[in-house]
Amino acid sequence: MTSLPVFPRITVIGCGLIGSSVVRGARQSGAAGHITVTDSNPEVLDRVTALGIADLVEADMARAVEGADLVILATPVLAVADIMAAIAPGLKPGSTVSDVGSVKGSVSEAMQAAAPDGVFVIPGHPIAGSEQSGPDAGFAELFHDRWTILTPITARTEDAYALAVARLSSFWRTLGAQVELMDDKHHDLVLAVTSHLPHLIAYNIVGTAADLEEVTRAEVMKYSAGGFRDFTRIAASDPTMWRDIFVANREAVLDVLGRFTEDLQALSRAIRWGEADKLHDLFSRTREIRRGIIALGQESAEPNFGRNRGKQ
Image 1 (cartoon, rainbow, N blue to C red):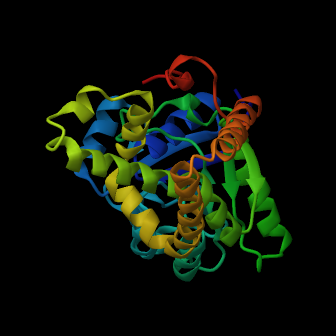
Image 2: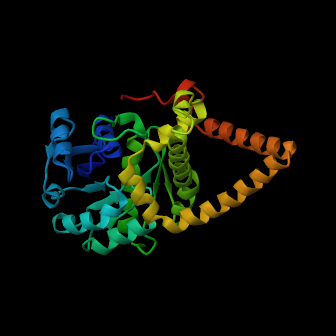
């Protein structure tokens, strides 16, 4: 526990998996004093009230951010522009506005366009999550030993902005995360490789399997092996969130998808011509990457890949 909260008052907009985990983490760690939650879905607000995880549940977003030292948008990325416009009148000078979206370039532009003078916009992205969604899915330990990337506005060079970045970094560290600062366009390219393309592949292969289900007389689902089950876990992620991600980060995703398609064609040729050495070399290299991820503490070698950690 910290002796004093990093931010006396925070407001979290959107209380799904990430938003509710921020709320729980901020409460458990002492990173925030007073916590307000708002959401466009009345059912979510009712559930947050029933769970008792926030000090205040407020349906009106502009009112919800009044007096907040930190506002975190935990919403689908295409909703950011409208939400920023709605909350702008309620933001107090000197407050910080951040987000948790998986796309930073277009989101950063939308946040800056609507933010009033005197408000510090610092886009962010905690690289943590699961296929679960909703306020019940969150848990305080979600961010422990995971990376949170912040993409500060490069044009903001004043000391006050640098202090705001340092304060937000401290907030995430108090929640257990490691923090990295990064250019927003570079972030979008990196995430296109490490997150967006894998999800696109998962959605596609599970969709293909579903199309083949009738042809194979239900044998695809019945005899699902571990690899396919992992794809279905990824493909079970929130459809609205991922629809927005692919629209908002289309350029980086298409660039990476083009490279992947070229590599897939090369792999197809190796299989067609029985080039066993090429296949073995590729599989050996990718196996070492998996081991490297485990060594860096970003995954577990435990059964079920350690996904049973944290409160469910």
